[in-house]
Amino acid sequence: MWQSDNFLRPPGARDEKEFLARCLQCGQCAQVCIFDCIKMRRGFNVFMAGTPEINPKAAPCHLCMRCSEICPSDALHDVDIYDVRMGFAELDQKKCLTWTEKLLCRTCYERCPIKWKAMILEAGEYPIITRECAGCGLCEYVCPVDAIVVTPTRFQKDREVASGEDV
Ligand code: SF4
Ligand code: SF4
Ligand code: SF4
Image 1 (tube, rainbow, N blue to C red):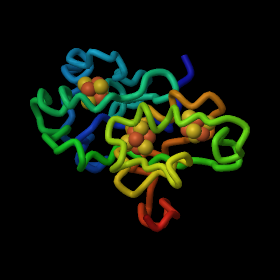
Image 2: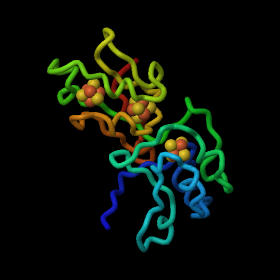
Image 3: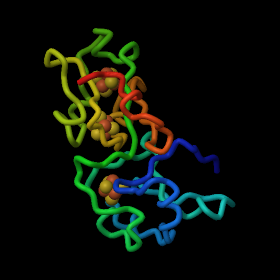
Image 4: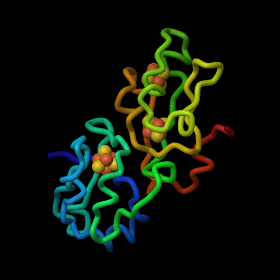
């Protein structure tokens, strides 16, 4: 089965090199995830196979923080919900129903688990993603027009530049 390389690591994941060195590929994080969003990677790459991944288009993280608590090797370390940095969501205003004024939507805002931190509403209507975004992917999952995409943290050279907005 085809797998995307654009997957997210669960909350609290250490930087990719250390994460791979620590992860026991035990699957306990996937077992405790009541939202069934963690899948264990398949394939022949011995370093990657069996490690946890999240595809927000299929099943995003809800930031319940169960997985980082149970990880026995600290590959996922215990982290405050506001310090989670799985990735960074970017909103394309040219696609967004609200920004293009086709429809008052705000679905992404309503579903963001840390709204008013990670997502704010300009003029009470227009969603803006801030630098506090955890990268959980819920907004990408719920957006009806694919206006939001989360880039995994390991692909971000400079989060400040990636955010664009100065909020
Ligand atoms: S924080 Fe919760 S919802 Fe997110 S991956 Fe971990 S167990 Fe699943
Ligand atoms: S803005 Fe999107 S990716 Fe970021 S924390 Fe909120 S729902 Fe998650
Ligand atoms: S869910 Fe999508 S269309 Fe709706 S406000 Fe958010 S980005 Fe715009």
